[in-house]
Image 1: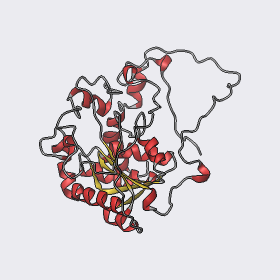
Image 2: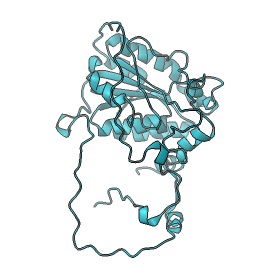
Image 3: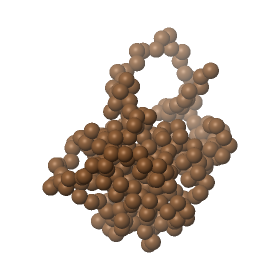
Length: 312
């Protein structure tokens, strides 16, 4: 990538959340069975590509002016496990939380979005006590969630923290089990339901669930804003690498104050009697949670090396 600091932050930090990092030598050592690759005369035609974008390339919203009525604040994992003294992960994020005053700024930003006529999306992650619904329980940070019984449903640890509990008119995203808030959840359907074009993302962890959700929102064509002082992770180095590096690739990074200043048109939010039933969740996973392959032994015959953009 573009700097040694960014390289180190990714390979020793973010990579560990989503994968098993290896050197090339270690990976090659795992390839125990070597097969001869038969030369192919010609490649078969590509399989049908089905678009998963919300906005086509001709209608992508990136860089658009922020219209509060078409804006959603996606608040990721404002739960006691992270945000409150006594949560199992609180000590790890406490330093960054305090350095930016992120919780108070998040509370204020959520209030500003509601007042301007936008939607606040509360996005918790919750697992069954036996972690049977954890979609990749042997790999990365999800392995830690299973091992340490994190974010267990129907517990104080899994509850929303004080100040960031859902209010009337907010949307509670259901079924988040993975790191990205899109797959197998109600998020995309709810964004479409409310005609959202701009998503502003905040919460925990800066370089994990926030970053993962940001990347997918970008690929789906949303106008993506990341709130740099409304996020927290486990180190100042990781926080800086994400907010000054990765965030700039996939979003418009803003402080809470700058984002609130963009909410130019203020509308009164009408109280809603009750929300309709959740939209159908259509899985986008290749492997169901009961069949996830994370942490499995490497079988060369079932292994692909994905080489990204080795172009002149």
